[in-house]
Length: 198
Image (cartoon, rainbow, N blue to C red; front, side, top):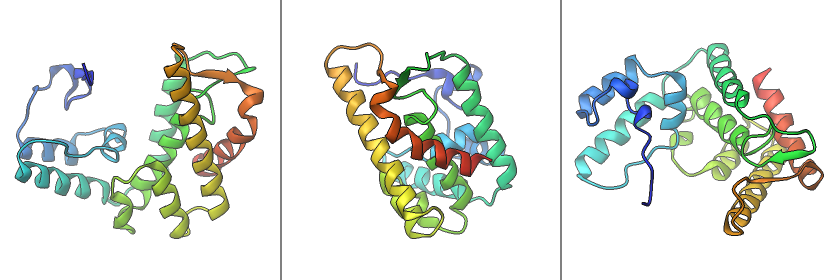
């Protein structure tokens, strides 16, 4: 198995159709989708199949991302979704979970998704699916976040992913390290989180 598909994540959840028309997908994204579903769209891409459907998907994706949003409502939704995710992960203070801990991989991904949703209406180029590190550089170039800050967060993200892959290759079931090992990397991620989410 290459990928496991979570059927709960399709439009309308477990009660939704397994396959929908392009028009139904467009209507769902424009009128019914939750903010977390739009966060997911920031990372979505057409990968195989009919090229016309792929082009239609990309148009819908761009239209969804380019919507002008209420920044305070967006911030609240993103923050609350992240808090819900944290509830199920109790991690001792001396341990850092590369993915789940405050200042880890998911926080970087949520911040980039938030920045895309908050800024794509003014800067359509941030709707491109170019990856978190490239998007951080793009936001820095646009003056949305400071260059030094963007570089520090991108470096932390790169190092966290590298450590996560190494642990997986070594057969570890949890991607966790000693907090002391990553404390300097965590600091700029937490700093940007506080800046964006307060």
